[in-house]
Image (cartoon, rainbow, N blue to C red):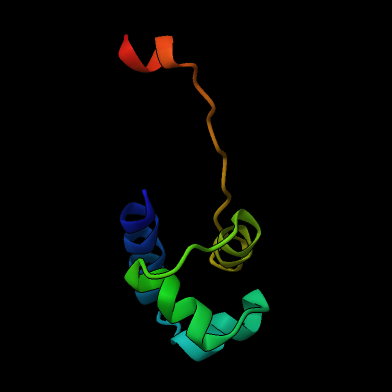
Length: 72
């Protein structure tokens, strides 16, 4: 899942023509944290991911499923 989120964030940032420094400032996180997020390193909190997505005009909508639903 981390690599999927990382790819989405990096592509959206590039599509908008925003550099990492600017996005990090807007999202209220460090450039290092954003870089780690975009490369799939570390273990960001949902809050951090949500802040970055919000800064990109996106939202995080987690879905919770039971094991039975996953097998179906």
